[in-house]
Amino acid sequence: MAKRHGQVVGSGAKADSVVEAKALPREDAEALPSLSRPPGAFANLHTAFLGFLRIECGLLPNSLEAYGRDTAQLLWSVTERGVAGPGGLKDVTPRMLSEHLTELKTKRGLDAVSIVRHLAAIRVFFRWAMTGGYVTEDPCRLLERPTRWKKLPDVLSPAQVKKLLDAAGSSVLRAEHGSATTRRQSGGSPFPLRDCALLELLYASGLRASEVCSIELNDVQMTIGVVRVTGKGNKQRLVPMGEPARAAVQAYVREERPALDKPGVSKGRLLLSATGRPLERVRVWQLVSQYAKLAGLKVYPHMLRHSFATHLLMGGADLRVVQEMLGHADIATTQIYTHVDRSRLRQVHKKHHPRA
Image (cartoon, rainbow, N blue to C red; front, side, top):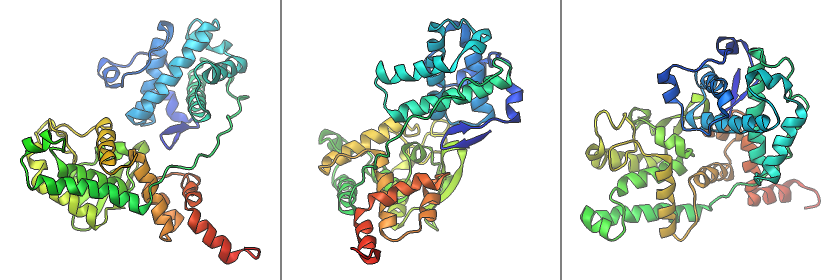
């Protein structure tokens, strides 16, 4: 079974090893993230499916949680339609699934993107159920993929990015002229070097929030200015940092990180919290919002990744190179950034179209 962007597609022989609906050992069950729970009759089946996704398919916690939540909601839906337990899955019809997807839109107000994600989880679940003999025919075979409007990503201009990074740089300068207590009383960050390194990495290397949190100290190659990133599906890639980001990371590692590092707690991660634990995604969002507010902007972490890709293409970078640095499995995902750079499109049209 292959993985694409954190989702599982297809099915293969690996499913044979986890076809029975047995509960995972206690240590495996406790390792699963907090999920919406399915009906009691499906609890063991649901746990076995999650074990398959985690162990056999290697899904990361965020993807695992999404699949678990979506399939739990599916199992509640089919239960309401008279399916009493695993033995009744063979009675699930395409109409039941279609009604479930319709309710996600009409009753819960989910958009097309969310419904597509639900559909992906449903398809993987029933392919797995077929390998275990719970169903003999895939009820998803007639379901159509909801239309997805391509929404152009939000992107900052180079000037806006500079304004955001300057806000973090100003925090570092203020820190040099005051104590930690003074900074906290004035609303400043107690760890300005860490925050500066965080923002520089998000933009200079185009990292996801989860990726920047998972970077280990050994992943950073200071001498050559490269960081090793573990992305979706545990795929690794090497991405340049650039000189400003390298300098920011080096200053943080030299001056702030030693005081934050706590053996057995820090887990070797690069970016640490005040308690010495690895920085979490929620805190990354908070820090980006905090400095965006100082800069008079509205920014979320993924906007810096969008800006990274768009600015590379604006500078003439090859689309395949940008795809590799972003860690996209499919170049079609990267191509959306070619539509964001409107100025470049106008220049190409003006230069090459006979009626321009």
